Image (cartoon, rainbow, N blue to C red; front, side, top):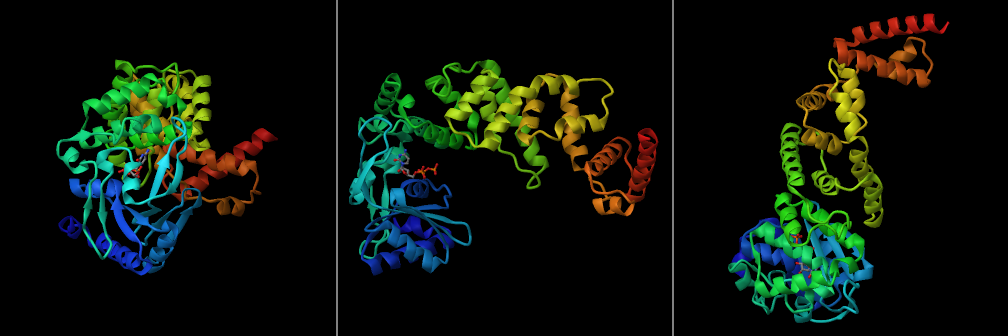
Length: 430
Ligand code: CTP
């Protein structure tokens, strides 16, 4: 395996050599494991290094953090740690351990073990390979379950028959790896997976672990492939009983959303960020009513900001779609309708509306109106003798709307508008 390691980017090779040094100093055996080894063999770039040591993982992590001058986060509950280097490379460290599960979906009971135990607790053969980085046998490949052969034959295979019952999130993981690398769940594993589904294994897992898996899947490069496969194999009732299988209509929306996401990213590279996974999730949940969506957000403990965006789409789509479809709508009105919404919600409205006029108005908002800024500031208003007050904000907003509608050219035009506005207001107020 040394040949593979030598092909790694130099910064990763440097980290591995430092880890080797520490393993010698502490007299611990150390191994690269998991997804890092899988991707190394596949030739897929992966900058998340996973190291398991036969010894104290936390101590090893502290030493590695020192020599790399990185940042250490300890996960004491799991006896693991993460070091992040200056270049944002991530190294996960853990002690080799044995795991036993007391019931399906339970958190495992953990006890110290060796590398063989540690590999045996893992999900699939392709994720259960290790490479020694200790001095004594640097580069030795540990492949107890023929993961390399399975990779070569594009197979996903569990290590034992209880794997999906021990940890039902592996059902979703199997589909994720299958779609990501173009693999196939081999027949015996497939039978075990469907058997676990029949036992409602997914219902037994902590909802937050399911949420994290779903988010990871929706963050994959081609999430629709994954959604399609899950739909065929499982359906989405594990999220809510009302969802069952998505129909053609949902896939049309997913496709349209994908197109709009690509448009947005292409247009606003680096300027504006978009949580695309939220958009796909909103489409999946769209069949549910507001109350049910609220419940999903609570049960799966989505963060407040995420839940707000997910529920928002459901609440406002019809109204915004109707308002934006009005003839001769002023640009400032478009601005006021869309500005309070998240980009995720705006993009999904653009994707799912059947009205060309609405699409056009949204594109104008994103391309033009949303980027318009005033030259005048609060300081300028104070100089005009206006005291800071809610009126202050109101004047600035009105000026911005006028600029959007009539294109006030520069600071002088804006000030002229404000003076006129104040005069008129004084007259009407009294
Ligand atoms: N693992 C497991 N069962 C799980 C989660 C993880 O056995 N439910 C093991 C696998 O060996 C996996 C390793 O822990 O390779 C690291 O997990 P994770 O970082 O989630 O997965 P990666 O394989 O690194 O996948 P990704 O490329 O998506 O990060």
